[in-house]
Length: 202
Image 1 (cartoon, rainbow, N blue to C red):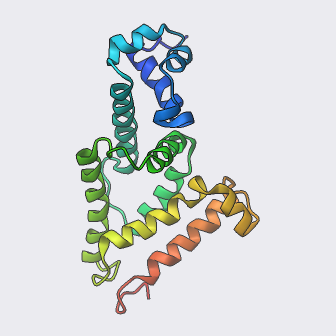
Image 2: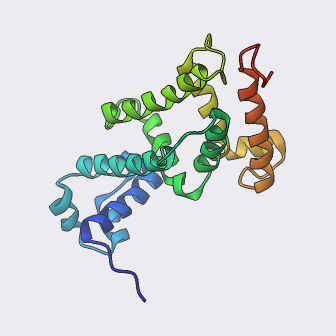
């Protein structure tokens, strides 16, 4: 049985995610978005009004998708377990386009942060995870939670964001199960190093 065809607006939005991830805001073209969606470019303006508007809609969609992955229902796990799950998530094909969007956004320092308030609220929740782990005795409470989160995030996204550096530094394939398992073990050790001195983890 064939899948139901997506609505025109969603088809355009999915095409725009790929186009902006491939070329950034400056390099993306409305004509290319329409071509990817198999539609007329006038429909892009009909549904979104402008290139800026569809770009913002792209970020709204990918942020919502990543929030759903990052905060699954019924979450109640140790921080080390969450970090390992985020390692897998951040190096999956589902997040590859999101990472490319972030890289292009980082290169465009002149533009404001899209959906800044909404995205800041997400990162507040991610930092709050660290505070919760500190309160539960998993992470030393003297450590700045936002700095700890940034350190853990940096380790999670290195394979996806800098795959060639990983290959040069380790000689391993950053997408391989072997590397991700070894890197995950190292991240677990990293988190354990920040346990309080009187913690059983020490």
